Image 1: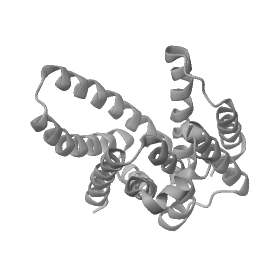
Image 2: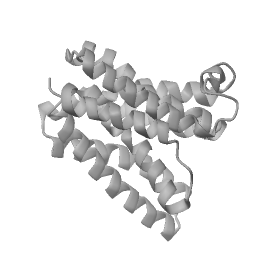
Image 3: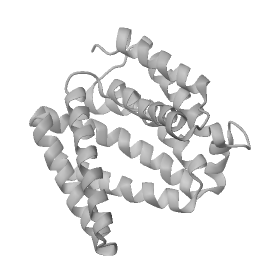
Image 4: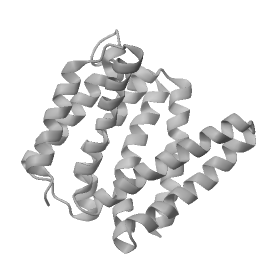
Length: 221
C-alpha cells in the first residue's frame, strides 16, 4: 500500500511539474518548490510523529528563505511576485501542489525504507517511476542521443535517490529535504563558475547558515 501510494503520487507530481513549467515562467514556478520543507514540518509530524525542534525549524526556514531568494533573483516585478502569480498563473499553483505532494512522498519514502532498506526501496521506486515515465518519453522521442541522455539522467537520479533514502533512515525527514534544497545553491555556484552568471550571494549565505544550524544543532532526533 505504501509503495503504490508513493509511486502514484510521484508520477502525479512529475506530471504536474512538467505541466507547470510548460504553461508558466520558471522564475514564477520554481520558487514554490522552496516550501516543501515547510510543509514537511507538518506532514512529518502527522505521518511519522517526527517533531522538529525549535532550533531545527529556524534552520529549515533559513534554508527555505535562502532558496526562495535564489529562485526569485531574476523576477523583476518584485520579491512577492511568485505569490501574486498564484492568482493568475496556473503553473505556479501546479508547482505549489507539487511541493505539497513531495512533502507527503518523502514521508512515504521513509516508511518504505524502514520496512525494507534504502537500496531496495530506491530500486523499487526508481524502477516504477523510470518504467512508467521513461516508456512514455521514449515513445515520443526515439533518437539515440535522447536515449543516451535518459540513461545518464536515470543513473544520476537513482544515485541521488539512494543517498536520500539512506539519509532519511538516519535523521528526520524535514532536515533531509532542507539539506537537499542546497542543490539550488550548488546550481547557482556552478552557473557562476561555468557560465559566469552572477549569483545572489545573500541567498547563498542564508542557506549556508540554515544548513549549518541544522547540521550542528537540529539534525539529531
